[in-house]
Structures are given as C-alpha cells and as structure tokens.
Image 1 (cartoon, rainbow over the protein chains, first blue to last red):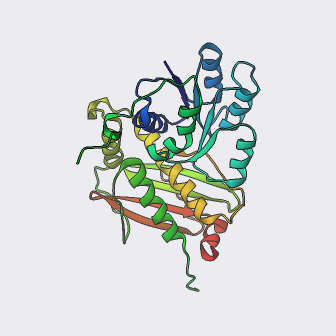
Image 2 (image 1 turned 30 degrees about the horizontal axis):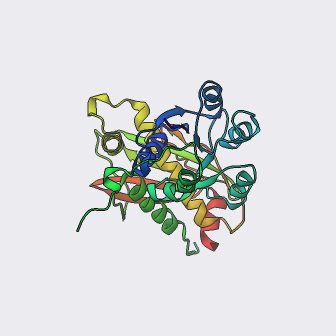
Length: 142
Length: 160
C-alpha cells in the first residue's frame, strides 16, 4: 500500500492536502502526518514512504531543509517531494526544484493542481499501485 | 491630505475572496463601514509579518462564531468536539493563504518575498500609531476584517 507523508504545521492544511489526495485517487493510501521537517525525518527513519508532500514555511525545520535531508539520504533520495508554499516565489521555487523537488504548488492546494503535479508520478513510477478515480471523480452518464 | 489611489484594498479583497472560495468554498462580499461585533461575540485575531521586500503586517480579525462554523464544515466535527486550537489553526491558515496571495500580486516579477508565520492573539493586535488599510467582508452575515499596516507595504499599494 502507498504511504504518503504530509508535513505542515497547520492541521487545517494537512487535512486539506489529504482530502485533495483522496479525491485525486489516493483514498487507499496510508497517510502519515508531521508538523515540521524534524518530525517528518523521524518518521522517514522508521517508515518506508512513497511520497512526501510538505509545506515550505514551517517552524522548527522548514520544508527546504527537509528536502535537503531527504535528497541527501541514501534511503530517501528517490522519494518524490512535492513542496507547498503560500508564497508563490519564483526564485525560491526554482531553488527547491534545482534541489530535487518534484513540484512546487501554491496554497491552497486543489485536486486539479495536485493531479497535474503528481499525475506523472502515478503513471511513471512503478512503486505506485494502479488506483481507480474516486467515485465523485468518475464521469457521470448523460 | 493627498488622496492617493491605493490598490491595496482591491488586492486584499481579491486575496480574501479567492482564499475563502478555494479553502472553505464560501462566497465573500466586501462591505463598507466599521466592524461592530455583537457583545457576546468574541473576536479571534491573527497577524502575520511581511519581512521582504515591503515590511509590514497583515491582520485577520473575525468573530469566533464564524471560525467555529468554518471548522464544523471543514473538519466535519460536532460543535462540542471543537477545541480552541482548531479555531486558531484554521484562522492562521486562512491568513497565511491570504498573505501569500496578496504578496503574489504586489511583489515585482522575479523579486523574492518573505513572510513570517501567522500568530494568533486574544488581545487587540493593531497599534494606534501608523497608518493602516482596513477592509471589511461579509460571509453569511458575519463580518470580518482583513487589514494591513506598515508604511512600506502600504506605499507599495500605491505603485503596483
């Protein structure tokens, strides 16, 4: 089963991201949550995770530092990392993409934006199980 | 006093309307006049610092009953299961998103901007010194305020 870790200091933001992922088709995934990069690293040492979705701006350890650790770790460097930022900052986005982030999304995240940014992961990464679209995402007969 | 055309109220309104629509699926309407909360309604206050490139502060003041209702809708919880941290967290996240959207409109292309983490308070946040731009909004009959202070931030509203 796919494991996704959502990292954000806001429980509201984590819930919104989780709901979007469920709508996109990850309803069967196991969701892990962390309030900052440090907590996420602790979880990543114990769990095998398939995707990291993290906020950029967090206390204790921010998303950029978390990304650096994930991409620098021998066991974690292949895990795709999607960054979420309330500050649509082109220079910062380029910086984290150069550091290995898979995508940078603006807040608030929507299912459409998430689908665009991780749809290629679902298609290209063998570790992802094939997932059916959620019921409300299926086309309704006319 | 010179009457400058300042786009800041327009920028605040657009950021607030988009944020409420996208995060809590509610239509927000900008309204005139001071916010006069009912006596029994406690106000919840949140603030966020803008560090660069135009230092200032953005505030979000809303009736507790409004944030309470949003938490019930968003988290699908009963009223009795709501704890204070849920209210403050939702308010902070709304402000964080509003501020990001504002700065996206205000910062020159290619310029890095930096905002702080939202802070929630129980006491009044607005100082009596310095100018501020205040905007009032109505959502389902509840009035809330989003305002900005800081000379550099407000001045940017006049030229962007």
